[in-house]
Length: 152
Image (cartoon, rainbow, N blue to C red; front, side, top):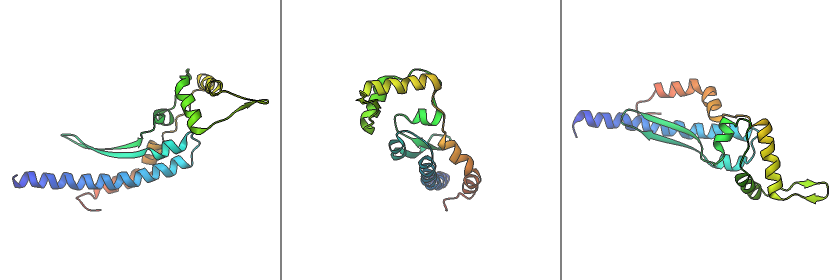
C-alpha cells in the first residue's frame, strides 16, 4: 500500500468513526423523541431503533431508523386504505389487547377489523421522527462533520 492509499484509509476511517459517534447520539435523540410521541407498539419501534454506517465506492452514508416491521407506517404514515388483518391480529396478541363490546370480550379478528376500518377511513398520520431529529440537530450535524479529521 502506498502513502496515498494509507492516507485515504485514515481519512475514511476518521469519517467512519465520526459517523458512528454521530449515529449513536442521534439514535439516542430518536429514542427520546419517539418516547414523547403517541405511537402504538412504541416499545417494539424504540427497541429496534438503529443506525448503520454504509460505505460505497464514493461515499459514507449514515442510515437512521427503526427496523420494526411497522416502522414505515410510523415514519411515513399511510393513506386511507385497508390494512391486512393478519399483522394487526399479531400485534393485538403481542400487545395483549382486549376490547369489550358491552359485556362481551371481542375476538382478536373483530378488533383487527375495527382497526383496519379506521385505517381505511382516516389513514395513519406520519410521524417522521428521524427527519424531526435531523432537523432539530442540523446545526450540530454540520458542525460535527466540519470538524472531522478522525477527532471528536
